[in-house]
Amino acid sequence: MARVDLRNIGKSYGQVSVIKDLNLSIDDGAFTVFVGPSGCGKSTLLRMIAGLEPITSGDVEIDGRRVNDADPIERGVAMVFQNYALYPHMTVHQNISFSLRMARLPKDEIARRVAVAAATLQIEPLLKRRPSQLSGGQRQRVAIGRAIVRDPEVFLFDEPLSNLDAELRVSMRVEIAKLHRQLGSTMVYVTHDQTEAMTLADKIVVMRDGKVEQAGTPEELYDNPRNLFVAGFIGSPRMNFLKGKLQADTLTLADGTRLAIKGPDGELMVGIRPEHFVPEQAGQASIAFNVDVVENLGGTRYLYGTTASGENLVVEVREQPGIKPGDRLQIGLPQNRLHLFSPQGNRIAATSRP
Image 1: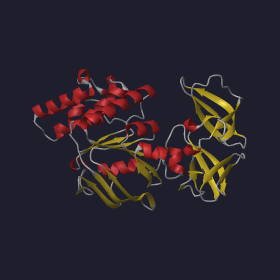
Image 2: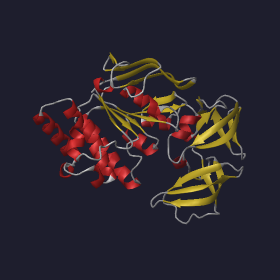
Image 3: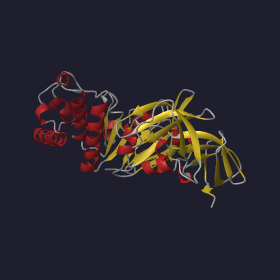
């Protein structure tokens, strides 16, 4: 296990800057997930930690040791790639043990490490097979096993589940979470999948254009997003946004709905998550909603539609059968669930007026 510190990290390709003066600390034993849109720099940052990508400026420290100029094998890290990167002509045992054989470890130590990794990942019956004889999930377990045998200080995962089907992604996500609890190792994980980030991470790092927009626990980012970008990126379906204007402690939405809220006067954006709408109640502000599409997921349904002012909304409902496209609903807006953002996209502190 080890702590990872990134200090004033910059990365440029010629005149193009992809990572910009980034500072981040990854705690010893934590599971940290980098998320962000394509091209935000998350995989590049991971590869710089691994030593697969040179650093333009700044320092990478692993367990207090500056590793900018250290070869990947000297950094105490092991990386699991998106495409598995298995040798097709080798058996599972040979793939897992490859780095140990290259390091010329004793045969009995190699056998011991492979046996431990295989038992941990429940792939003992596969050790004599070749990658072509394995399913996608089995190949991913072998790739993880190859990392485990190196006994690294830090595990690095670069979108390891993106090539798997939906059901297998769920089971492998559970296995990776169990592996982290079992090993207690520092793990850094890159993904574009919201669910992976929310379910696996101790800490989520949201990136955009080579910068960290916000870093914190999944709960912190979900409940208290720092800005519109984080609010819209974290959560699936994403947070709803409505235009509004606050004046004299009264918030007026684009459709004319009014709420009593204290805050700075001016134009703003109002955010509310799909699951935070409630049935209309007496004395509570509500908004008219026209249902266009009903997405039925069994116990949960998502209603897609528009407000009277034409703004798009997604509403999550439970135990309300019979709702169908074309229905017009009146849905409640609980004021303690609203998020206010300035025209520049920054979060605004506000309170309900007594």
